[in-house]
Length: 441
Image (cartoon, rainbow, N blue to C red; front, side, top):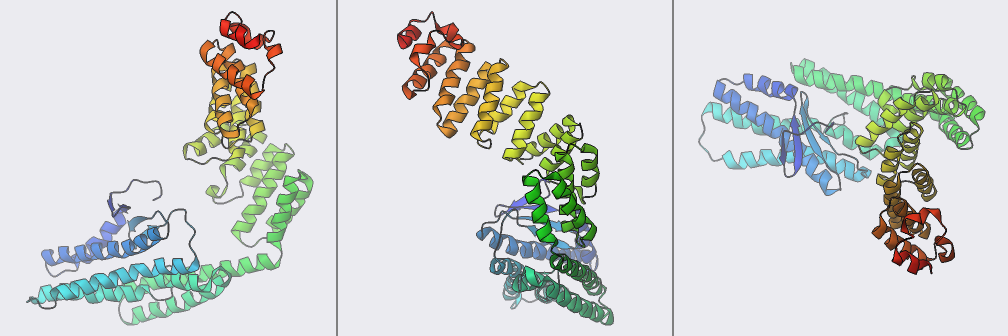
């Protein structure tokens, strides 16, 4: 939920209420004939929208999502989290909201149909059933984005027919907006008029994407990345420069600028790499590793370290990010922190990289941390060399008991030669111990 804490939870689903939503509810409440009726109208709107979003959220959770609900000025929005849904499941999640509203309207109608009510009460029930639950639910099912019917349309036609989705959404949205004007329904005219404008923008982007595809720019981006993998910086630069000049869509243009930044960074041209990356919009479209590489190439390793550390605090980790962060700390003379990160992220590091950090820790006198890293790597990779290095690190740290245990294991695994141990300077602290002499005799 955009990183903000929820105000409450329902059925384990976090819900956050924005100030704009409360204002919308108050507007509907102010239309009531009396203050009491207005408060009931406001409550009806609040509950109806919440039930609608719960319909989306509960079905999405059944499909493996971790949903959260945000109530905003124009209604509600259910965030699904990081989940990949099939087109059919996406359609079902979209339909669940309006049908939850229909179910709520049915419950209200069944509960009140035999009650004796005064005109105000009858009008409130009519407002809840006919306008909020039934009316708004039907409107929501119209094939107009971003409404639920538009989401169902997009799922039915699929990503390859996004232009058709945009055209249908725009036409229907414009027609409903015109009907809203003719029927003196300003909310209807506003919502669907805005949706028609968004549909036009979506259609334009779809046409641009089709143009980029026909121009072979997706394939060109793939070739640029292949050149980067080969460290053919010049080739990558030529291809990426052509992409950014011809691209119509922002994602393709961003990919071109990013490839260009990598090529400049690979050639050690940090300033040019920064300049290329500055063209990528929004800034959030750039992954932290790319920013860090460019900043390091530009001679600002402290900025690179800050970017990677911030990403790490947010739970964003990868082998490349960990490797670079370890290297940046080591280059800055913070070997202890470099080894600490290597221990925490040992599962992400290739074994050879972990052993390189281990060797640096031993050479730099970080013996206890070196031992902890060796123990962690052995648990992950079961390489006897790690046990031998753990024994060396513990012996140099003068941790006699654990050093002897690790040494015994290393000998049993054949990772150390007994005949060489008595003269090995790494084990000098153990030479006066009878158990060491017994092991090496």
